[in-house]
Amino acid sequence: MADITVRTLADSLGLTVCSGADRMDQPVTGGYASDLLSCVMAGAQAGNVWITLQAHMNVVAVAALLDLACVIVTEGAQPDEAALRRADERHIPILLTAESTYSVVARLAALGVPGAR
Amino acid sequence: MLPPLIVERALALGLGLVAVTDHNTACNAGAVWRAAQGTGLAVWPGLEVQTREEVHLLCLFEAWEVALDWQARVYAALPPRANRPEVFGAQWAVDHRGDYVRTIDRLLATSTALGVEEVVEGVGALGGLVIAAHVDRPSYSLLGSLGFVPEGLALAALEVTARGVGKPPPGTEGWPLVSSSDAHCLAEMRVGMFLEVAAPTLAEFRRALAGHAGRRLDLVAPRV
Image 1 (tube, rainbow over the protein chains, first blue to last red):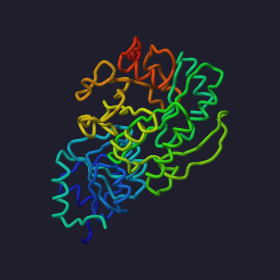
Image 2 (cartoon, chains in turn orange, red):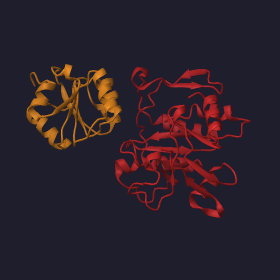
Image 3 (cartoon, rainbow over the protein chains, first blue to last red):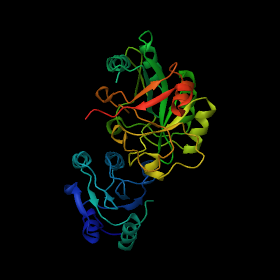
Image 4 (tube, rainbow over the protein chains, first blue to last red):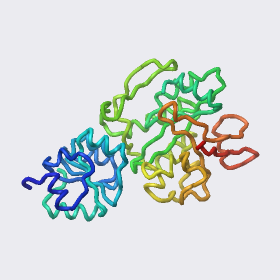
């Protein structure tokens, strides 16, 4: 899985970047999909892309806590201004899509992003 | 939110009863109860438990010792992860004066391993009651996550936020509704309900929820 970065994901999937634009060249180490934050805290690894339909402030806290590469927010969910400000402060790229979590994961797998180890 | 300031603000608002439902802990509820002694303000100790489904349930008791029994079950069901105060905020236990006592090290801002049914049964067995918190919110809410109340779940009531008063969401039909301030700071405290009861007890509260024997509960729409 050489050289997949946050930019690779955003470009390949046509995602909207709404925070953390300064970290688009971060390498992506793997992927984790869950809408339960406690599961993400237990299962996601540093450098992973997290795919979820949750868009609230706690998503940013968990992404920062785990040092994730980025968060893809699915189903057209829209983080509020406060969450985006916090994401910028913590340099967390949040990428938006109208697609479902399942579709996004399928496309990431096709790109060669493995599951979190 | 120091205990003496909570009591002061509650009295200023004309509240006769508050419940303290901190996230996955009751460690400060006793201090608020003690700070309220002699003021006429009744204090119920409780917890807001986050279930494994990430649903918030308000667990209410009358006695702090019983709340602490439930707290022990909740602590045993939390993952063995330490808090990160720089991410989730400080977790302090204080006394009735508001003086620092100790820091709670385990992470409280996460899900327990307890399911919704387990929490309702466990609290019921201790004589407490369970209210599904802020069901009109999309996150951490029973209706937000599940879309319906599981059949036969022995909840006492569903809680709606101030915005939800008068506009109860689908799924609440047939359920008694409560509304409170869910205050995370003093300025958020408000009068959410009026209770007509003989005494500030859980038994009277249950009667008010059912509208029995002349007891009643009325929600207060927030001032715009």
